[in-house]
View 1 (tube, rainbow, N blue to C red):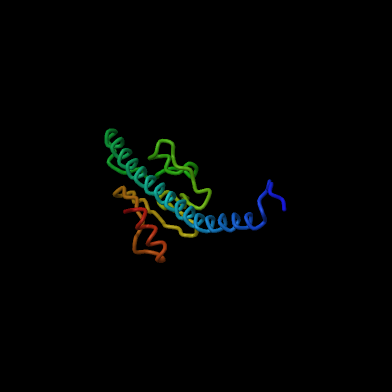
View 2 (view 1 turned 60 degrees about the vertical axis):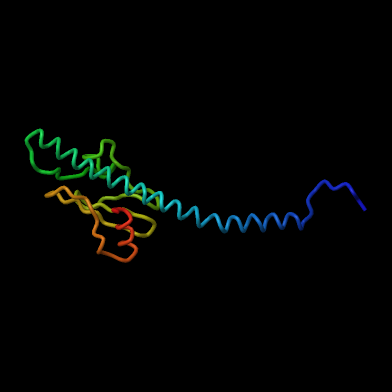
Length: 145
């Protein structure tokens, strides 16, 4: 018998692969949920930034003697560039914003989309938490709470 071993046995290698597989099976779903949470947190921050920008734009207009809210929140790329200094880049992956027209914006998260309306009369920027599917209602609620 040889007493000098310089390598791992096949059984030892198989056990390491099995343990790594179990760890990966536990970690991958956690990472996917963390990414969605990050997109929701970014969406909340964007909404608060846009709402704050609407108020700032209204105050600037009032100094100039105009009492109306801005007619548009901004262009297509970047979005919201009328009320947010540098704008917000449109969606490129599983989460983010897109625009239909000057009053209708969409927040996307994976396959769920929530519509946000900008009301030019009273300056509100919000989604309807009672409209759409259960997933859309939940996303709207998560973004606006």
